[in-house]
Length: 187
Image 1: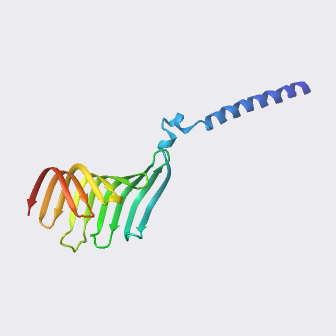
Image 2: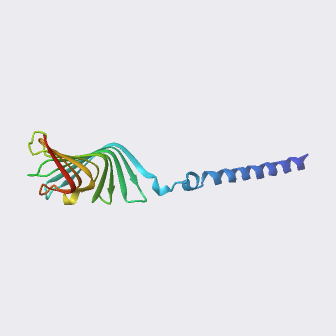
Image 3: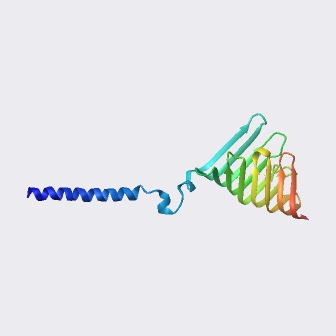
């Protein structure tokens, strides 16, 4: 009887070690082989309801942003923002505000690509020179104080509405260049 229980103990131990090995193999498999996605395509962190401020004391420039959600991706030098609002203030220059459904920030913020219901407002609400621009996609270059698009754009100022395809706005000089198919409507 002693020999038989001794044999059963080793049989149970062997089966237990085999089951443990099988379980550890399943648990430790990389995420990409099970879900079909690359680990570096997933965000490494997500932040909700955030605001940020960047101040350039030499030029007295203040840049503020608000977003509903922020996703940062480790494998790509990319940050994605949802429901974003940018504000740029500079002494002697009109207030510059940008709203969009999504924004992708590449690098350290040198290039920002805005998508979905993009609205740009240059000037204050009570300012007669207030300009409102709407488009579906916009390339914002904060360090150059420039915005660009090659999509349809609608520009409104006072009683005039302009439709065009493509735009470049230099916020430093206030110059707007419309690239093609420009139509103006005076109301």
